[in-house]
Amino acid sequence: MTADVQKLLDKVRIVLIRTTETGNIGSAARAMKTMGLSQLVLVDPKEFPSAKATARASGADDLLANARVVDSLPQALEGCDLVMGTSARLRDLPWPLLDPREAAEKVLQYAHQPGDIAVVFGSERSGMSNEELDHCHFQVHIPANERYSSLNLAASVQVIAYELRMTLLSADGLDIEQDEEELAGRDAMERFYEHLFQVMQGVGYYRPEQPKLLRRRMKRLFNRPMMTHAEVQIMRGFLSMIEKYLPRS
Ligand code: SAH
Image (cartoon, rainbow, N blue to C red; front, side):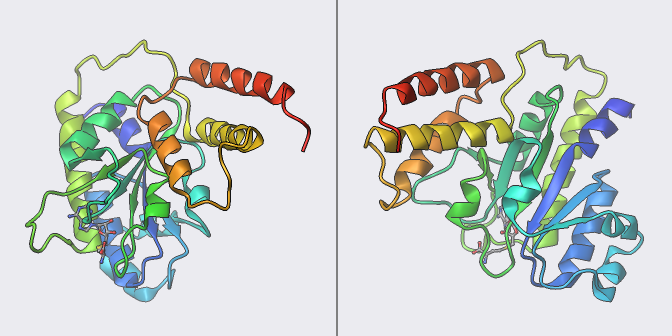
């Protein structure tokens, strides 16, 4: 295994949202370490650190010691270029869907982008909400038994981490050099969306008191093509020109 594979594995953040069963955090850390992942981020965990998590980590306690604990999902995703949210449930307004193998291929495509890559997991009780999936470019679904599709949290971390490792190992030594333009990371896209909604509101097309569906659809539209930095700059320039014609609010 070359350093490149490890470097890419180190760019992957496993983000666990509001984990209620602290033992699962330990098991997730163990699952990660066996597959060479190192970055664990916990969003508002019910209990952490805990003796139970350390016991379940069984030698992967260095991952627990280095785990970052944050209050909100956006904080966990700062500096990420690609965000994938895992869920057993398929949605009425579907997100672009990947299975774990396709998700691993996506990670490979991002090998030369500067930012990190996040894979987000929901809480045991309620999984990921639509609002949480709004932060994700893709939904990753493990194609389990349709009549019993919800895996244990740490088990699903294991499946994703395994597929990722297999994909990176089989690409190891292959030339995955890409001379594509740098894609706009999540932070630049968030600034673009704020600008876009501000202008949409300014021209009277969007009213914030309306249901959030328009925001969700617009984000989904612009997340789909994975915009480059240069393209986002063009859109921001265009929005700024429109703003000049709007009355100051
Ligand atoms: N009761 C929850 C299930 C939570 S399972 C619900 O209705 O969604 C805990 C987490 O494990 C999920 O939020 C998801 O991140 C992951 N997970 C479980 N089964 C999965 C599957 N089949 N595909 C993708 N992720 C899954």
